[in-house]
Image (cartoon, rainbow, N blue to C red; front, top):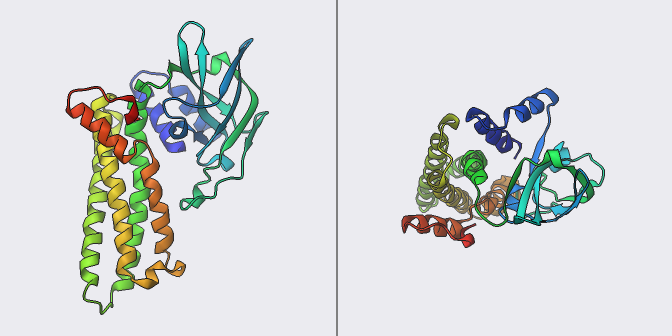
Length: 293
């Protein structure tokens, strides 16, 4: 998650937007950034109370990957502006600041090593000067046209790596299998792995070394490939486990843990059915509805 925040600011800096100062600060102090963007998404959560010089924040931010080792929480919260109505404000919060604590509640099916603990924030002060983005609450905003194209290739590369490892273990395990069905299962596995690799490679090409256009068309192309990659990674790992037969189900072979890990690929935005709605709406010449997010 640190990488995609850095990548988004690298894009902004390249295109003449604020971002260079953060990159320099991260490099100089070796800061670890933690994002709550996927959990907050368009509506965000928590509460902000306006006080002199800034806001008082109360919230619990879930799926804050890397939070046990993080330095800065890059987060957001909703606020009802007296004039503009409901907005979402984006800002950093020190993970070592007063009123900020990392909860010991990351007990998932897979990806147990990601440290995606929730972060509890109680009466933390957010200076007005720390607000970096203000956007309408619940609406798709330009910020996601930068974040999704740089984040999803990084994220899906992890799951592609998981699928590759599962396939490698299955090949080794099944090398001397006498079962006549095994080659069919391995063939399915190899096809799925190739689809995953092609989708991820294509996502990386779309970013074009941060030269991509930050718009809905780019987001659409990236999220289509995200769905294809996620499904292919899951199928690869499932076929790897199946090809190994009963022993593949046992913990000692390691494939079962990879199978659990790769299931998390679905939950990163935009999830499959929402992506179908998003892409299908654009195909009809319509703006994607709020349900697509």
